[in-house]
Image 1 (cartoon, one colour):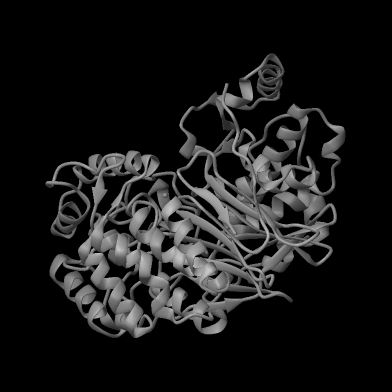
Image 2 (cartoon, rainbow, N blue to C red):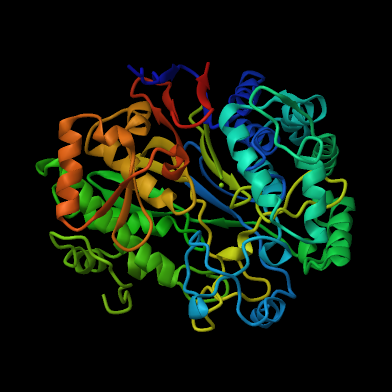
Length: 548
């Protein structure tokens, strides 16, 4: 039989993430006297080295920080280059755009999508500035001290963990299909002998990334946006057909934002406002808050969760865009009246809902906590595995492909445009009860993230499970139409098989999928009533929760 992971109990502080070396880096900072933000940053920076397919120096981040009194939100996502227009994309792709990948939200013109790889998919990286801004506001240790483990692993090497190795091997096969000068450096940096990925347990080095991290650490990230790293980025773009310029990098800034919330059975789920998709999770929970899941059979519970999630996504994909550029009706979407109207659309059978009218009614996640009660929920990504596959010469990191989250539909609020933030999949979560912190949590994995949040919150609030048990629970994943993936563990006994039969009788097209990455990787840390924390880490990934 398979034995589940046990929760980690810690009296002082804890860190949970998807790679053990990164979790240990955060714990080391806590033990040196750093606070939860210091620990989260050390973990995040180390993750760029030890889990490069899921995040990198050239990615974005979002964070929610409980400072002991209230929540703060940081939107560390980057904007599109000034030269990235819809006309430029259509001209570069023969007027057709790219084939849809199904990987992101937003309407597409005539079924066409933004390119998923290459320079047209690149936006300005926001992670280095996000590290600096979080540290400037909340950090206690010197900024450069938070890079120690990351630089050491990049320079001296580390044994690659199993899930990271498996994803890396898939990425090498995908890279082999890409043609163009912008992709050449990726093969030099991220393959062994130009032809394969490192295997599980094999030592891997990235000395170029060590040098880049040192420059970011020494300059407080300034080198990335206005110094020598920026010069290399802009020069590489100019030589290989990219639109990213030095001016684009110099204009970048993070945004401090107020988290938004949904109330669910005496608890509050907090997310960041658009351009992220966290509103989809809030919309779904607002629908579910009006029904008694505890009185339902398991198949009824899952049916309602799936249908509420569909409604949340329908609205998120219709309305989420950069609020600095277009009006986004966030407040209107989250009213009780709108939730009631959407709830009334759920029937006994699987549906394919359209967006409502509110005017009328590949990623890493980590969390960290400290002895003083500070808590951090942070998510960081270069989007699809290894992002754009564009690696600037001599820097040792890849650029994200977040521009692929834009729409090519000129009537859509998320249409591609210069200096604009795209629809973003990565969302940190935070749970409170009657205004008091329960703790940080998240589930990474593209389209899975809001529905992962819904499932973890329901497991916590409705089923009374601790963080590890909530993460261990079998998951479902909805992507489009009536198609739903479920994990094999759901069918482990006749009761589970009966649940699947009943869901199929309701019109859900159920497929059993044994690939764990389809269902996201989560982490969670809850505050204990008598002090200290209990933490859980994703059993489907390599990582761990660790505390002291």
